Image 1: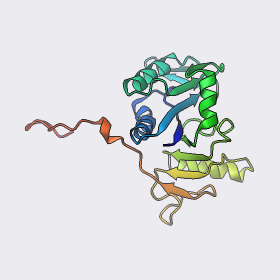
Image 2: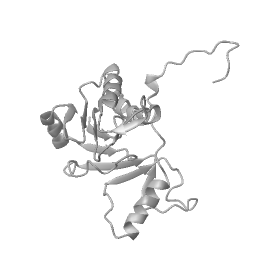
Image 3: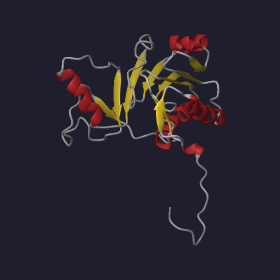
Image 4: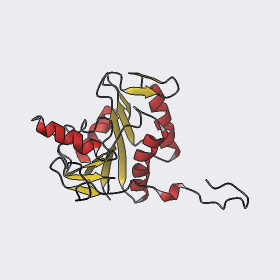
Length: 203
């Protein structure tokens, strides 16, 4: 069993696709028997989106409520922490968060909004992985930073959902990294399969 930290952007942008993107990994790791935790922080002003009012500000209450309810429903209620722009910690206590960061075996950064913002805190984690879901855009952005002489976030392994990235079939740059390919994870145990009505529409 490994202690795995997953970082993404569920609280800052609590929309269906982003919630599922990170949650499938969290629950999947837990179903496989691993000790999993979810971490997130607001690293810039106005980072939190409220889908009900369609506004962005520093109020993380909507995202915390939605994500907290989701994780509690699936037995992960004491397995998450969010740090807002003012530095306040929600979910885990700051002491518990520090202990998780100190003892983790793997850090999985799921890219997207604000990848790299936990790299300082996870410097001592033995294995750090970037998994990105925006193929092409991510690599172009990395390449532009390299061309500008800027530092690029460093991980031990790089994964992408883009099955052609880093192959002769793709014209996208690689940012100087070896990209492994992994489809978005689905924890199939979460879905109940029931027969469709005989005359029901195809969905």
